[in-house]
Image (cartoon, rainbow, N blue to C red):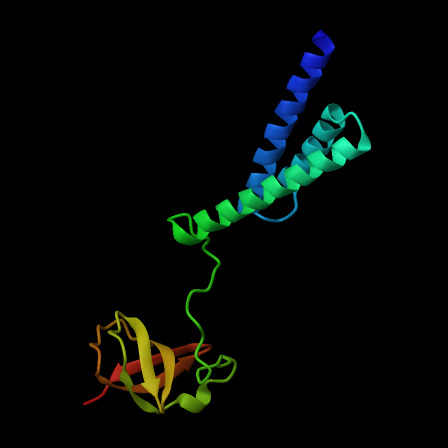
Length: 163
């Protein structure tokens, strides 16, 4: 009787530890130590509790159902609360605005445009209908000021205000 109680208690501890470890893996994915340890805890717990193969299969199905419910709850919490994941893109990228390589921006020298944001000293300027990140020479330039690109340093576009 004592051995059964001890094994049953150990199985419950393994189940709880397994669910906690797999919950950690669901929040911080990567199939690493918490996920593998949680799976091992659950499998060992099934072997300790199940008296037959059929009983073990039923327990495994119940555990899978509980893990599915746990995944749904965790995803619900992560998507609707303050526990949002930082790597989810919320805004859709505009199709007409693509990536512009910064390898050769010398062709922009002398282009005139307008400041879309305040330049403090960095901001955004629009040149020929294309938005670029620009830098002023340490001066504040208010929004809607006319600009000219007068220097290119690698991927940096240095601008100044024009009248």
